[in-house]
Image (cartoon, rainbow over all chains, first blue to last red; front, side):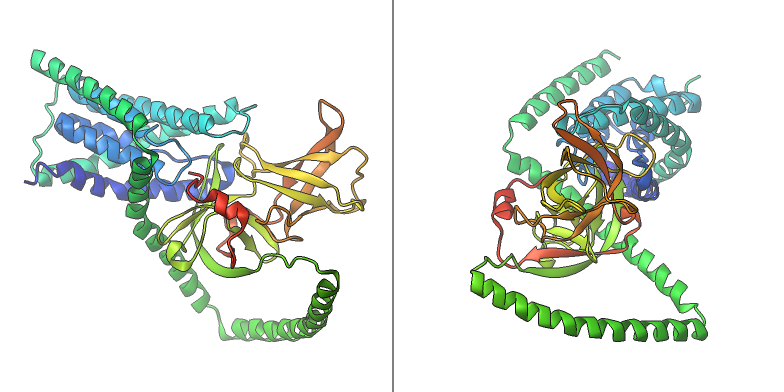
Length: 172
Length: 291
């Protein structure tokens, strides 16, 4: 019973982190930068949840980010689902903490690039001279993903332990 | 291991089918899912906003009695001055009504002001918006202008049950017509939000500035709304012209940038001007809410 809803309970437990990121974005609003951590939130669950649970968790993360922003529907959620399938099928990729940190940086930056491009396509404003700003946004996403992973993973692992989700095998 | 790979392959196939279905699904389904996720987050936004208000309340409560007395005295003086002004305005209003009746001039749309607290601010290159703690339940409608005193803050783009999203003047989706201070012929210029490309505060573009327009000496030119199009009442301040105006490639007009007259990211409270009678622009926006 609990295992089936583990993804939803984990999503609720992760939400305060997403809200925290939104509050940090609020503080940075005058610089037009978004503190994005949705990609990093996917790393720890991808090691332990079943594939279908991980897929639903990733979709929830994506839709939560898209809901209040002018991004085409599913533009972030569906790529995150694809990443969730990939990570939960190749668990040795996230076998230890350094690998998880690398994964968080890559997934978070990639997801950030995805929503940035989707928003650019949806907007009718010209994209002149935005390369520098995009680079800054990606750097911030990479940094937030790497720095945010450890506390995020600690929270998520604690919740998964309480829910009785089997631990991830530690591989060399 | 093979089973795992097969499972992964099957998952990718299911995802591809879902993506196709997602694209083909009626937009109402996508809008419903978006609305569900917005409403899920609304209580948290309210909580954050109310916590901020509580912090401000305690900060103000800690002020000394002397400070409060001084503030009260200042307010009483301002009130007295405003009351005098109000009396003058009443005479002007009567005169205005009389002249309108004489010339059979169409009465501009009347608005109902709904005061709303700002819950959060969100800004990237592609959007600059604030979320306010009033929504459909409070009578807010999409397309309604949002102001602070006589300054335009933006326009409501999406309305939910208890929250609304407001596109700021500098947001790429924002457009309106305006007059420039110092242009005696009252020629219309266009205001467009632009994608923010720097860490500095966002600005909007002012285009179609007449080639012979000269900036007033001494102070930056104020840009005001025209009242055309039925969205914004006329005479509201949009901002100021930033420095000089530059000739466009075609050369018939000039372009410049608009600096908002207030720091849009430090607003705590705004007023939403909800038209009492639905405007034609609003009717067009219904069912086509900007996302």
